[in-house]
Length: 538
Ligand code: GLN
Image (tube, rainbow, N blue to C red):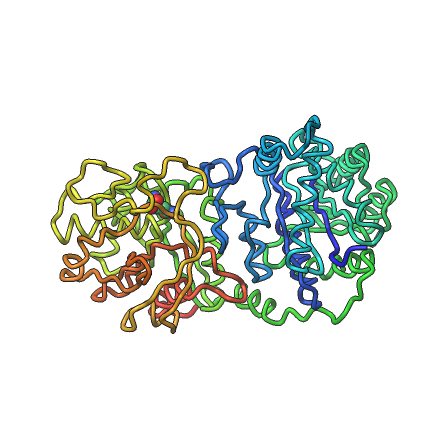
């Protein structure tokens, strides 16, 4: 008998049904009933982690406190339940195979043939159970990436099928998400894809306990009855999930559908108190009734896929709500911006954010956007590469070091104002080798960021190889760009500001990874607050 209860979330019919949001919403509801919950994502690809993936492939790479490069769903988990995740919360097929193959090389399997069943499935099960045991969670929700029927997810489905029996009755359950499409020609909602998807689950030996039906149209009791009848579940276990204007409404929707109480009943856990969600509802009320409206320009090179900047987008939602201001984020392709067209392209924009990124493409456009923000006193936030661009721009246009660059972009520049970190110099492998995760930073008191954080000691998450070149620090500070945040152990510049400017901040770290609904990030809150100051109320 295990103390921790396990919930497995699978998806059928199509991808992008929002398994991550449903998992996070359920976690939120259970948490607000007093249970300790965490969420884990199993990803079926062979990459050991998404750190080496181009954002166009898989959206943003989310970095945890312990420096794991993970799937963007972990960002949703943290934003909803407000507790940090870790490497253990994201397991990929690549990582599973790597561990099994390393064990095989060590001779740990004692001459046995190493196979998908039992060796790969055992390793998957070990990773699922480890999370519950290590931290003593009441409930672990495990989201299985991909769609049932995919070749890639088969070992995961088999592993959780086995686990259900090993854990014993009432210790685990399956939630299966499907789509109920609307056929406008016949004016009908269709349940057949759901029936087929449940059949695929049954072929794999799994009877889903709860079905969550994604739908764009209201779904009546008759449809629920039909699904219950064909898919061997009771009607309370058929949950509707209709499209809503913000993902943050999904927990309230799931509460209305009683997903949490159905889950608790099936797991044999007491219902405890009704979830209050006071802060949560307040957040949504403010989000839906803003008094002001602003537009922020996000300059990046992956803007065709907004998921590439997921955490930044969400941080603006959080900061907007607390400032009672609707923040429109206008994504602008960095390759399109030049010194000449910046004023035209950035017309009507109240604040400029230059996004993180890697490599040469789009860099000159980012630098032009910085120049425009600096010269026109427009509130500016540079994140990681965005901060580095602010440094390069200042070097070129204020210090008059015309060839100033980052050594990431130019190996031959005589003025590498951004340079490779010392500890990176011998690094040749790409995977998991950047400066990753949480590091402390000390802030100077007379700075904009001090006003934002209201403390001198902060901890922020990182993902970079290059840094401000301290050989130039004196020159920069004399000319008005000040390093206001440092890592005291290494002397690395973490934050730069222009005190003469209205609000011009560059951060080497990623504040967006730490912004949550109940704890919006101070930098985003302050940035939006500054812009809002001179906007009229609606
Ligand atoms: N490419 C830069 C570096 O490695 C910035 C990275 C980032 O923006 N995350 O330092």
